[in-house]
Picture: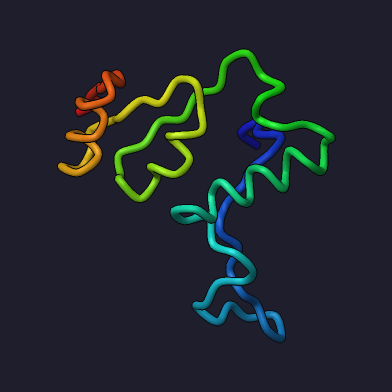
Length: 97
């Protein structure tokens, strides 16, 4: 419907046709985002280093593990921890508010 070919996200657990409110597998959270991205890329016989440029936008310090892996991290309406970290690294910061 939205033309999104690939999506890496946290999968909800489902039992007997109903959602349990729990997570199935590794959550896409903190280091889990890196692990899941690397697994997805490996499945395609790729790695992040195969790309000249990589971008990741986030508002949360919880995404620092993935932001540290890409060539172009961008802090968007960042929480205080991410804002300070981005500033110390010279990363771009933007606001969509």
